[in-house]
Length: 194
Length: 194
Image (cartoon, rainbow over all chains, first blue to last red):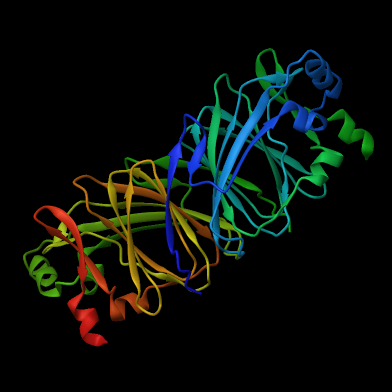
């Protein structure tokens, strides 16, 4: 296969968190993902008080959805918390067994990874470093810093995303502030389902 | 599939051009790739005079070779020329139809892309920008600047590399200095083979 448009230069706009060109641009607000936070009551309280902050924004460049082609995306997670829990992405599994690589451009945060049988590990990601996530592991990114946490991510096109498992069952762990520092603790709701 | 080692933090060492950890680290000298330059006589003259510069260095992090897992690599191409032709990588085709994404960290250069039927396009890559290369296109990177040209590259594991086609036939175009500026010209040797 030789595509007619063999390449695309993609410009990075870190101020507006945009890839140019970008195929998907999405802002995710608290109201879009309140069920993903451990303390849903606190999320609802914020929303009732008229607070619906943008939790994160991302965009992607995807030339095709053929498995083995490449996608690059850019994400910012804003600093903030819902109760004690840091702002984070919803997290997802790939539908196909594909890996992913993150490259941290600004700030710092955590990657929470979970296998389909509920094993959880976490990694700290700081500016200028990369993280490889193996196929088969669901992943969520969390802003544990004071500024914006901005990273690029790279994965094979056509991998597919499954957000449902996480929405339904959550992650087995939560990342919360404990005396101003991030702590990885058991998710009481997840444990209760077992 | 859930791997037992679901993640790896990878540190970037731009001074020594190393990913830590890295699986493949390789310096490619003029003597390793003299056939790849258009002016092989000039390459041999340099080598006879005891000049065997490192043209480029790269390393890769590869957790597995399962197609769909992800590889990240780091390359520096040093500034310099063989005759009028800029220092460059050998270039290769992937054995499987997989894409690749480049992210330029320092300097500037060019990407030369060639289809299997000999169509050639080129793109300029400058610091802070990305370039997507579609599946099926062979690719070579060229340092057309005055300093080091350093970039990250991302592609699906298990893609395989074919250097032979390029070694045998070359690229249909060369990138040479013309009054101090890069020009893309026909490769006389390639044309002669048709």
